[in-house]
Length: 254
Length: 188
Image 1 (tube, each protein chain N blue to C red):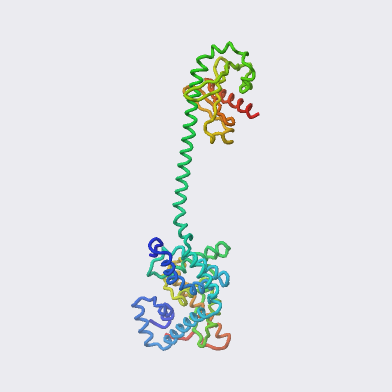
Image 2 (image 1 turned 45 degrees about the horizontal axis):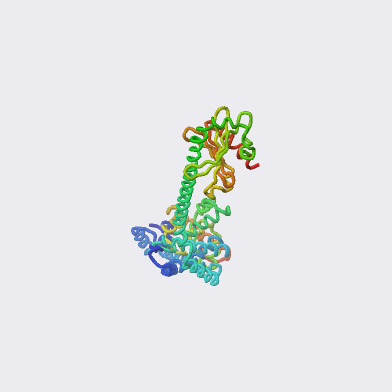
């Protein structure tokens, strides 16, 4: 090792980052070279001064007031019972719980709603089949004879193609309906009105929607009108059945 | 590990105070060197300690807590600089300037602490930063590599150049004031 080599690695030697073998070479060189010993001594001194200058310089000292405030803040955070530490651990658990509860509620509500509607729908279909379809021939003779006040609810549906045959109250399995029987182009239409037994179903969102479905070969449209539930059941096409339901719903709102 | 589920809140605080908070002076010093502004350095120190407290369950007892917190601080500072649009990659020109110091300047004698500090301030931050971490804060090359997230070879080359630039600045300083040794001694 010569002096140039030594000066290249002198700082690494001071940092104790040289390999053991290289350290031996450095020792040997320093034993025989006063210049490099002095250079090493100066570099060590520069390093000490560098360290001292930064550690002692006022501008690099932590303000004691700030340090105390920071310590208090950290301590408060660490010892706070409901600190972020707990929240951080609890948040995923709470979020999962909330989602599970929401899903359960939504599923339960959906099931209740479906069950509720299905039960009444079945009773309404029974009225259409067992009452409307069975007796409509008898009622055809009454066309134009029903007092106007009794048919005001479906009056808007009456036109050259659609006649109102009958209106009466009937009951099936404990459920009472006001049953309007109409005929369009030889096909029977039952409009059945009944009280909604579920107050939650009479909310404003429900009032604006008409639900259509095909069941037992029949088209059935249903909607809420205030506290009442209205069914339109027929063998008409889905579009025609829905059109009647919409016309009726609009006339009620008007 | 200081798992929060395994120890009480009070024990955690005692451990944090002993292992981490005792280095707040060192953190501030390096923060100050990085940002050169008292308020920014205080913010950076506070943010680092808060982050360290939050992540303290990940700290492994027996490892270098100061190095761990310096790593956090470096990441926070990089993010802060990126937000402010101040993040600079290593500039080739600075690397070249460091390379062009043809000779190894000798160190002047009779220098003061203040002169050393002034000389270091003139060295480009990317080189002075590793010099501070190695020669002031006593981190090993490997630790600096982890703190700054750069290869150990880059740490070594930046240190080599940083120290060389510092010696060069010190030599200039001495020459300007008419004292110190002449450089370029023929030796070996």
